[in-house]
Amino acid sequence: MFGVRGHKTSPFAAATLARPRRFPSFVSSNSAFFAVGCTTDMFRVNAGGPSVASGDPGPAWSGDTNPSPSPYVNVGIAGNFVSSTAAAINMTDPSVPAGTPMSLFQTERYDETSAPEMSWTFPTGSGDFQVRLYFAEIYGGITGPGQRVFDVSVEGQVVLHNFDVYAQVGLNKALVKKFDVTVTDGKLDVTFVHGVQNPASKAIEIVRRDHLRVDAGGPILPASDSGPDWSLDTYDNPSPYVNAAATGNALYSTGATIDLTDPSVPAGTPMSLFQTERWDVPGGSELTWNFPTGAGIFLVRLYFAEISPGIPGTGGRVFNVNAEGRSLLTNFDVYALSAGTKRS
Image (cartoon, rainbow, N blue to C red; front, side):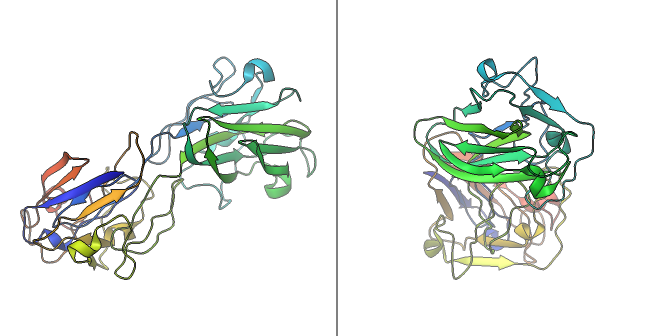
């Protein structure tokens, strides 16, 4: 369980603030709300290629080259085969997360030998995960459906059978497949099994499913990146992670345009996240969020914006935020940091 709490230092702090993303639990008082989620235990590998910077808030994609294979793949017994293309990749398929680097699809690791099969093993620890497999048919020798067909199993279960990238999207077009899985032995296994020609992978991403996001004071919002959707937190359906009953279930929203230019805001963050908020009325219990994360190390991202017309300027809303008993923000003043209706 991860908790966050806020402490009121201004009688008006309860009028506007941003919201949460993926994190554990916390508390914030007299302020608007943020977001929660956990992003540790995430693995990203650029199969067959060098390290690639991320196009979202997640970690970089680790390299997997011929001279330096990924430590997660069985090149020692399956063979060290990589390939690449300079051709532009069509990234328009809706399965491809916004911000995904095109270069991920321009390299690949493929398996020439049918025994043993190419297998990847990630030391995830036990828990619930989502496996994201990145594909594109980039080999010019594949000219039509049926010329490269293979299976993929995750944790011993076949998730793709007779999979044919060309048949689904054609040549040089990106495609991403996602599968939820529970790991009980501490290691997550992904195996590519021969059918016709050689199985090939462009990239693999593993994300814990206890990664949490909340749109404080607002509706469900679809993710604009590789993370999960933002769960709702409304009057009728408060988030199960917040003590809404104890703090008065106070929400606020605005139709004003929010300035998203601050460099702290991750690319692709929906503006609407900052147009709604949960705030904490003066007196009584502090606004507190508790997330069932389990033990571990987590990344907490708090989303703020001063959107209340009742905040006249610097000093109009000031509060503290604690997480797991430790101070994260002291005398925090969104207006002072962002000059009004802007997020931080």
